[in-house]
Image (tube, rainbow, N blue to C red; front, top):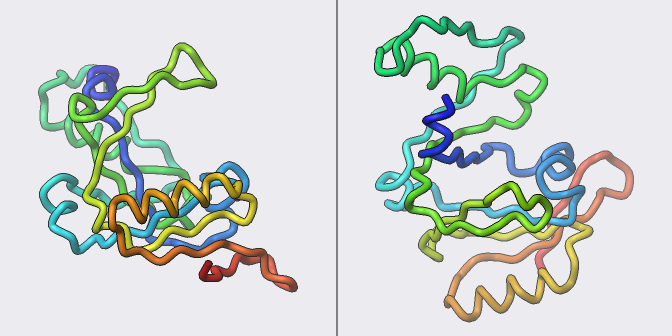
Length: 173
């Protein structure tokens, strides 16, 4: 698995676009943003092979005697990459391995030992950007600027907490 993680990154998507826990876990407590993509775009077919995550109460068994090149090992790796505890099943997650050599590398400003990987994608695959309710105004300005500069045609919304229920609503901005 170490050899796989040195060559490939894991890019994760969710079929669930509006769940309050997703906003808490993956957007730095509502300070980040959600990107909605047009998954019917050719880019996804040409560049990413999606694997649906399965949710289970049991860990995927591992047999250290499997040779690295064996079919059993390959199946095991796929299972490990795409299995999470069933407590996370609300995510409706899909994953894809992405070759790191195709990515831009940037140092992690929070951890000097880590490198972060980024990839470009065609601007037209973005359908909507939803800013978290705590997302700084400066980020909103940068998103608007990127939309204009790249002639992107996505809708822009801000998430707001519902006044009576534990849920998030999206309002166009």
